[in-house]
Length: 412
Image (cartoon, rainbow, N blue to C red; front, side, top):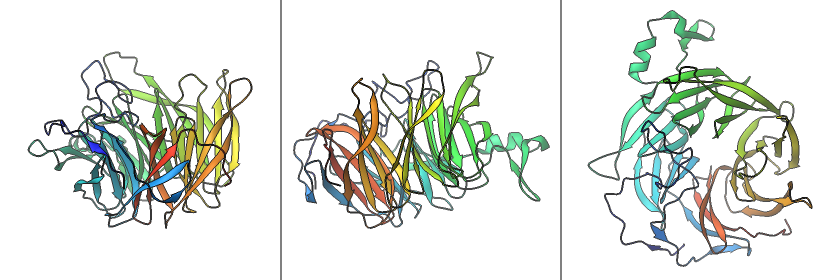
């Protein structure tokens, strides 16, 4: 287990889950909306002094810890400040505090497992199998108590639309729902610029306003279930079981006083025919063309790059795993892919002679989980020339790995 010195000066009055004030995923807004969580902005309130590795491994990656505690398979992970949040199909959400990753608190409710979670300020948004989004807030009385403060769609939003027939949409024969409601499990969430995006197995993408939790827009996005969402710089990327990644661009309302927005389809990235697109990640490099990677159920890793003309070009197509790719995570030049084959593959983007990023090169394979890898999160908290990688599995365990940033090609 990692042995790390905690900063003794940490104040208990520090608001739980608030990110560093220096950065956020999309910055703070001028109208005073809450700062949004930046997954790359980790707290500096603790200092890593020494790490003791568990088990074997290579010089390029080591197992730091194996953590249990969930009653069901781990379905999603989130990092915020010095906290690691994990949720499971058993409906429970556990908050652990770095560096020792001891359980800080536990909460959860709902009819159905937790499919996704995101943190915004001192709130946690969880997406559930029962087609609801729940909003949790840190209690003012105790910082390790989370209260359920709302459910989306809110009662106010529902009552404001339920009396008008034009607000109902047909979801199946003889059955209608309000357009603000999801009709099936909500599988993924994304947050940016004061908006929350939710993707569902009902094939729709919905847009919610953070400040008042109203549903602003519902998009019939795909021909099959939506499995993944990413939002970057006003662009939303959705991955679906229909084998496509769709790119949605946000358009501001002509009324400058309104924060409402509409999204238009900007591009369609097609994977293999009749193969589900299970995961998606977007390159975080600023000074390069946009590059999107998708993980497919046939084990392939696909990558597209946006050219200067605005067209998307397929640049990566590689057999990554023996079974379905279920999750992806980026850290610098290292792309991590988790699979139903119980392994995590590490990939490096190679530099070509002209300085551009080329094909992906497999540089390592991490094994240890006893079940499929359902979720991955990379931490920018660097030490020893590497970063921490968190993996959640259907074997109900959370594992913490150290991965070298200078990892070289190994025999894999």
